[in-house]
Structure formats: structure tokens, C-alpha cells
Length: 285
Image 1: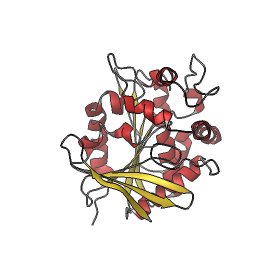
Image 2: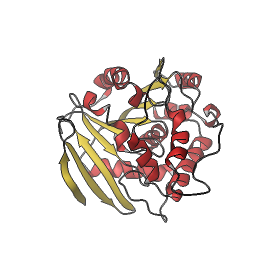
Image 3: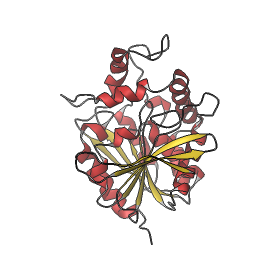
Image 4: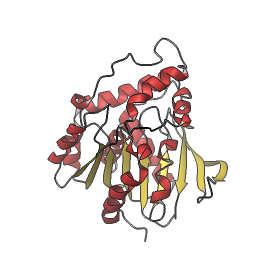
């Protein structure tokens, strides 16, 4: 079942975004669609404690040639946040696949930012018929690449966290000089529950602990693009080289950018992504 939550939304004179809610068996999933419906599909998957809004600056650069589909993973954004459902990565991936089925998408390039790249990998593992290629943006290949925070994690003693706690938590997500964190990112963290915040973080750790992404991706045999802000303060950018073990993988570092190049410099992020999808995206017949 698909429920409209207000129909198209127009931002700044750009083409309308179609926003809707998909009712799945274990929770409602919020979906945004942009671009021509007959164009090759891109599935954009956000990272931890984020939402579809994290892709807003990039979407207008992609819609001239793609049908862009964004989902709020369960527990995030405008999707449901049940306390009695699984947030394990295979379950999040299953929901993403069902969402594409409901939208009539038969082939898509899966693009993930940070832990969203881990979800994208899980989608491709479950649905190799659906995912034609993958693009991972600042997605750590293994737990060895994680940079432990110097301060304690937010919100464990109280929830919701204060704006200052969220800013401290989010500060390592950006490195470009002079970049100002969008206020929507505060909202994305604040709208989560303590359970969904901790459960989704743990789910990513569990999945990476089971098997490193380069090993999973090698077994999949899908075309792979890896983009990494060279100044990432959450995952060692040098770890991007681990993905070169995947046959045919394209790996590109983005100097002067940090963990969130999608937000810090959308054009520089879009250029290699569009070059990759021009080759590997599948056009609708």
C-alpha cells in the first residue's frame, strides 16, 4: 500500500519531489522520488542518524539523467520507529528492496553514504537481480578503519540530546573549511528514539564485524565506485585503498573534503558519480 503524505513538494523552483509512505509489514517507510520515471534509477541510502534530506543538495545534479529514489530507513526521518522490530542490516536491506518493488523498479544503481553504503551492499547481496552496480561514499570497509571519537557518544544519559550534544556528535562529519552544518541534521538526530539510535548504530558494527565489505563486494562481482573525502574524521581515508581488492573497483579520493562530500561539495561528488552511472545504470525499456 502506498499512502501520499501531501503529494509533490517543490523546493526553490526546482522540479517537484514526490513524497509518499509505503506501508510495509513491519513499519511504514518514507520515500522521495525525483526526476523522470522512465530514466535509469538511482537508489540513495543515507547514513546513520540521518535521512533523505542529507541528499537534498545532490539530487538536482542527478535528476537530469536519472530517476532518483530516496528512502528513510526504518527508525530514521519520516519512517516508522517501532521498538519491537529488527534494525539488523539484512532487514533494512530487505525493506529497501521491497520499496523498490512497490515502486516498480526492476534495476537500480545503489548509492550509499557512510553506513548507507553498508546497507547498499546488503541490498545487492540479497537482490543481485535488482542492483546493477554500487557507489559507496565515505563508507568504511571494515571496523579497523573506524576513527574512535575523542569525546563520549551522545545521548546515553538523556534523550533527546541537546542541540549542543548533537553538534559535537556531528562535528566530525564535516571537514571543509567554513562549512556550516545544516539545521536539518539536528532535526534528524532529534527525531530518532534512543532505541533506534543505538540499535541502528550497533547493526552496522555487527554487519562489518561479520565480514569486511571488500570481501562481500568481491563475491558479488558488481561494478563498484568508491568515493572518499580525504579529510574524513570518522573513517580513515587511507582505508579506501582496501576496496582496490575488488576486481574493477574505481576508487577516488576527494581532497579538502571530509566525511560528507555529498553536503560539503555536491558538484565534486556528482561528477564521478554521474560518469560511473552513465556506464552502469540501466535504462527503462
